[in-house]
Image (cartoon, rainbow, N blue to C red; front, side, top):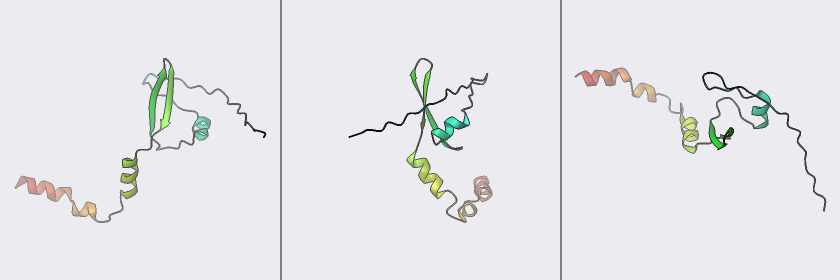
Length: 89
């Protein structure tokens, strides 16, 4: 039985931490990890100077996003101006 092992020659990709503690992740790195704009990433510290980014799939957030905007007229029914007027009475 022959086992085929796919070799990966990953190029080292670097980024710098800004004064505001921000980093820009290289596009190729994001593509390799299948991360797209809008994805939420969880940050874990593995060791001193070693971070791990994990795509965070929150089931509650997913359900909210699925139903957001799916009830036309709901915003009109819950008019903030009308509610504020009721408070002033």
